[in-house]
Length: 85
Image (cartoon, rainbow, N blue to C red; front, side, top):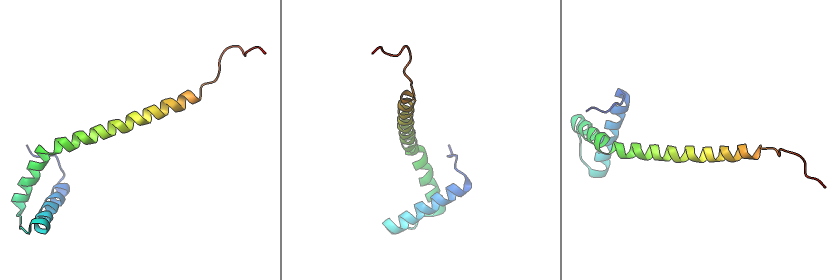
C-alpha cells in the first residue's frame, strides 16, 4: 500500500533519506532504494508516530478543557438569598 503523501512531500523525504545515508553512512542510495525505504518506514513506523501525535493532541485538548472548565466555574455568581447579619 502506497502512503498518501503528496508528490512534493515524497520527493522531499526521499531526498532527506538519501542525504542521511550519504552523510551518516557514506553510502549512495538511489531513488528507488530510498523510495522503498521510505515506504517501509511510513508503513511500519508511521503508525507509532501517528499514534503518539494523537496521544499528544488528546493530552493538550484535555488540558484546554480542564482550563476552560475552571474558567467557567470562576464566572459563577452566588445565588439565593443574601446571608443575614
